[in-house]
Amino acid sequence: MGVRLAKGPADLTEDGDRLLATVPNRHVRWNLVLVSFMRVLAAIWIVKGLVSWAAILGIGHAPPVFEDRMAGYQAAVIYFAVIDIVAAIGLWLTSTWGGVLWLLAVMSHLILAFFFPRFVSNGSLTIALLIFSTMIYLTVSWLAAMDE
Image (tube, rainbow, N blue to C red):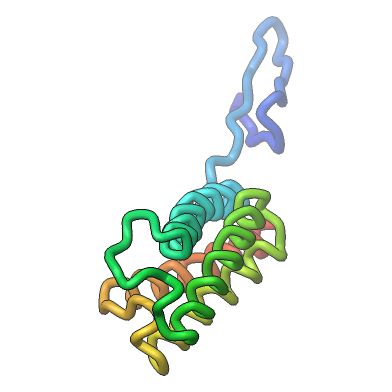
């Protein structure tokens, strides 16, 4: 008399006068990991977008004021103020377009950091975290797709 593996957590088997509960398979649910990761990224990207808005509004930033900066800097800050918030909303909703917009925002940041380092932060830690988070997102997305 052995316990068989169940396909669902509510699978019960009667064996004479005993009720045997079956044990569900314990494996990583990559969809849950993906949703959690997207929500963490969303929280981070909301803060990143709000920091860009703070730069535009002049909250907590040293002079020169936003209007006195170079046009390229202004364009980059406005672009990230909008795309970061929209991508964060899409990530929080765990929609496909949120992931795509987030990848666009990350790639935009990396490209600007490489070609125009005066417009965005280009520290080694920032670049490494952006690349690492992109690799994690793509890997977990692939594993979640393979899990289904």
